[in-house]
Structures are given as C-alpha cells and as structure tokens.
Length: 113
Length: 114
Image (tube, rainbow over all chains, first blue to last red; front, side, top):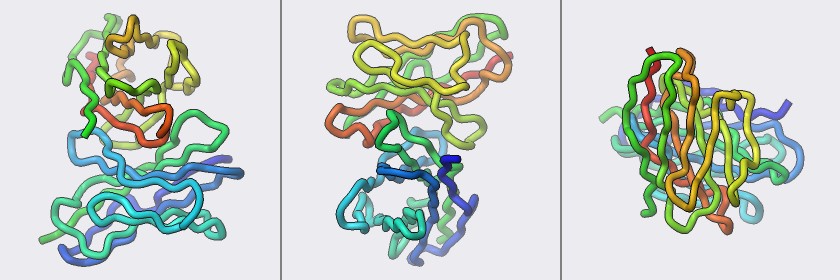
C-alpha cells in the first residue's frame, strides 16, 4: 500500500523554539516530495520540494527538509519559529510514474508567543 | 507571486441542483487540478487536466462531476446533481510543465449543499 503519513496531528511550540514536523512515506521507486503550508481559511502554499541530489533542501521563510531513504522520511524543520508560522503543514508525494501529488493528513502547528 | 483565483468564494445550494466552480489558473500553466477538503482535513485529489483532457481521476470524482476548460478560459468543476456529501471546500491548483510539482493553489470555494 502506498501511503504518506504525518504522525503528529498537532504540535505546539513557543516562539523562537525549533520545530520538526514529521512525514513518512511508503512508495517504491522514484518519488517527488513536497511540503505545503495552509493558513486558516486559505489555499495551500508551496514551501519546498525534493527529488534528487542533496538530501537537505531549503525552502521559503527559513524552512528546510531532509530526505532519508533509509527511514522513508522527509521531515520539515525550522530553527526558530515565529507566531506567523502557525498553520497546517501538509507533506505530499508524487511517484515518478504518477501525475498528481498525494497529501498527508496534515500537522497543525501552533506557535505560542 | 503567481495567483490562482476561484469564483465564487462561497456557494450554498439545494441538493439536486447543479453547481459550477470556476478557477482562473496562473496564466502560463498547463496542468490543472481539483482537490476536495472536508472540515479542514486532508486534501483529497479529485482530478487533473492537461491539454484539454483529464489525465487521472480519483474514486471521489463521481459520475456527477465533470471538468473542462473551454477556449483557455476558466477551468471549471461542475457537479450535477449535487448531493449532501459534496459539501466541502474545493481547491483548484495549477502548475507549469517545467515544474509540475510546484502547485499554486487558489483560496478555495466553500460549497454547502442543503
């Protein structure tokens, strides 16, 4: 079964703290991995993606993600969060053989001042 | 940055009626998508569209659903007839041929079927 899972439904951190949002997948073959952010009541915004090369990819607003083939993971990290980072974060996977992205269930990040 | 527009932002409709959701994608994009999201939950893929044709559709894309983009105008999702379970937020997205996995999403249309 091909899946993309985000094990944490909610994560709460203080402003200035670091955060890691987890994403694991179970797809064989070549895949494209992405992260998106969704602020309340709005559409998704692209953060970053990975296909090959350096397993650590940099995105917008200080976000980065690291691909691990051995762990089947693509976790999203930020060194110091701001209150405006409060949102729902979605991990997405597209198999190289597929034409669309499959999204995880999302992780709601709450940044407390 | 590039913007995807969706019209209307909200729609309330009686069960059994037809509804058309409109999407104005990023101007030079050629891949178009519709997603369904219920109560802020998971984004579920419905259908994608390229070169005037449906590429793939999920099992959520029922026979009552149809998509088209006549003459390069709006990319539309039509539901005829609507059912109660169609109540959700529908998001349109588009991407370019050179960067298919960087999708730009619209703000969504909130559909309520009564």
